[in-house]
Image (cartoon, one colour):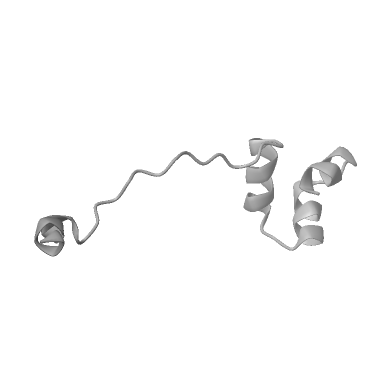
Length: 58
């Protein structure tokens, strides 16, 4: 929506008023472009039971 309003010729301030967010937020999304956020795979975490797994299996 922000990009569409910018293509219509609205200023950053008027876009911020229309969308209901801060001007800096509008600038941020205009600089990012149309790409969505990219997330990478998460690193596996240590389990709390790992040190006691041998004991529990016995």
